[in-house]
Amino acid sequence: MNINLPSISPPIPGLSIGTESQKQGIESGGLSRTFEKLLQDVNQQQLNAEAKQVELLVSENKDIHGTMLALEKADLSMRLMLQIRNKLVNAYEEVMRMQV
Image: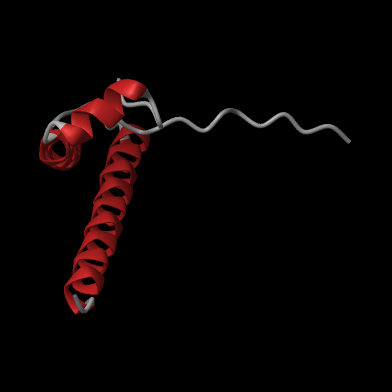
């Protein structure tokens, strides 16, 4: 049995894993900009999901499928962002516990 799985790609367009441009961006203070962009993307997904909900309630076109997809996408991106934040906080706390 041969199962072909699609490649795993980052959810953020234009962001690839382990490239030289990322490494240079992190070294030049791009880490904060990267997280700022991630937060903006998560916020945009939340706003899109809210707009889909309003559209479902108000308009005559009832796109329940599209609304549920937008809601789940927003929920998943928020949970992922929270996990990233938790990992960063844990790493920071670990560094602060180190004795010099």
